[in-house]
Image 1 (cartoon, rainbow, N blue to C red):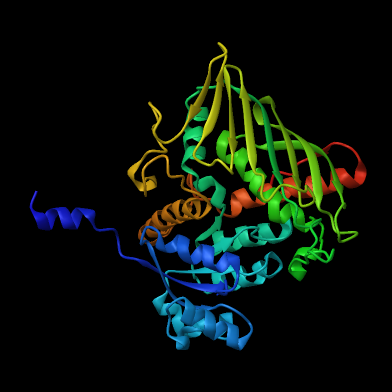
Image 2: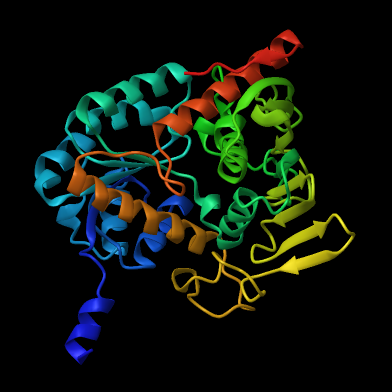
Length: 390
């Protein structure tokens, strides 16, 4: 192979041009997505409406390396000026704004990449599902935790039958933000939209959607019925901040779920435990490169990217640096965006988008919202509730 052939083989497809709606430079979500789209050089940020505040909007464009003329005052103006120059719009606004924004983009035949939670209720999810079908649209939702290479390795282990049938699963995501105080004893106050509960409490839209995706991603099983409690323990009375749930899934999988924003000592304690007929696995986000495995014969193993017989997690695309130097949250986001890029390019060629093993859209989102609605109803009625199915 000649040098020119090697260079050609190493070149990635052209960068996909995106605009941000929301995601100001001062926001954590904006910086995370900005870095993630750049990690593998699959996307290019070319424009945005980063904030409704004029000065912050212009400052964000400059901080992201854009001409301030590419910072537009609203979504409609952004689309009017940039539509021909865009492959997709990335929506990074609060959840309660997503429905109208995503709907407008789909009606304009623009591809959409949306931060979770996609919407606030199943009625909205069904409406977007119909729009995607009507316009043959592209709508991907970012579930970044599924981008961790070791979790993708675990998914493959489950699918290959390494643990036998998965019988039990425990997923938790404890945080402390709604109970913390500053040095003067005053509560830390989150963004206003996080203190507004609807049919589905915002804590479920914020944290619960991730735990639904963990179960779906790793096992492929679907929720059938739930019994749950929701509580308000934190600094904001009446705002639900804690959910405990027992869920029955297909194939006789029982799943215990706990997520909260009032567990002092936990920054973001995402943990997944899988228990099968022949073995078990435990993954903790704070040690994202390690997987603890126990076998039926009593042997215990610690697996990482450098372990023998690893098939997924040591792929070149995940090895931005060698094992022993842990990859983390932003890299997982980058891995998810890498797959979104593949899905978007495929959509542009075929005119058809469907979910892949690594990219999720409105169908999986609808299932998750229906699960969260069942959890909310169970908490109110204090009994088992069937999960709707579309």
